[in-house]
Image 1 (cartoon, rainbow, N blue to C red):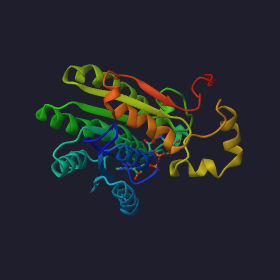
Image 2 (cartoon, helix red, strand yellow; image 1 turned 180 degrees about the horizontal axis):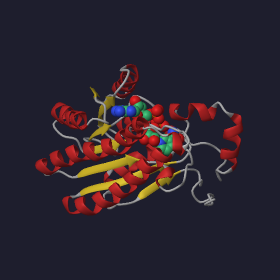
Image 3 (cartoon, protein in one colour; image 1 turned 135 degrees about the vertical axis):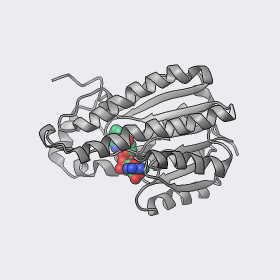
Image 4 (cartoon, rainbow, N blue to C red; image 1 turned 45 degrees about the horizontal axis):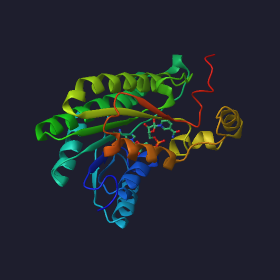
Length: 257
Ligand code: NAD
């Protein structure tokens, strides 16, 4: 196929919805075959698969709950066995739970940290083991958030998970650089996806947010997936160890309170 990801295979966690689905379809447009992952209902994953196949690429659906280490490992194994390799891993699956700090339960904390940090940690480990054994280059892209760096009161566990993935990315970029594996984060600002449904329906919360975004709008899924496709491409071969913000300028306009 033609395109900047021709001949590549990409695994995208949580690609049954939102940003992950958009990245899967965009990478297929650029020529990649895709391992589609979901954990709950298969319908979203099937929708992603149909769009990829309509583009003439291959899509292989694997159910895995990335909060379970054994499922992170079986996800990588199933995708690798299907396509014979995986070049690109996108750790996208994520959840958020908002509440006052004093009301956070152990169950809520575990869910957010396990999906958002432990999942990427061990999915990347399984991916890297395979890449090293196959002696091929590797690309890891984590979908973090502006909240890897910017406070979000009442979302303490979310901030802890995204701050953690910021340091995980930096550490792995240095440890794995000599093995020709690049590791980068994409930090979206406010993007229109199902995770933000409550916000989108609440004008009293939405208007002040929009007032703080220099470009004056929320981001689209395409705004994020274009950067993911670039970071996965050969053109980004020398890019590693950094976070790329896709936030309409929100981070620059933000003042610590
Ligand atoms: P979304 O809710 O549409 O997508 C989240 C995806 O993660 C879904 O496909 C869901 O099935 C999957 N997922 C959840 N738990 C999982 C598990 N245990 N195992 C496997 N998959 C699981 O929301 P989204 O906005 O597309 O979020 C994608 C990523 O982008 C998340 O990491 C989120 O934190 C991050 N992000 C989103 C925004 C935004 O404004 N939408 C901003 C910053 C960061």
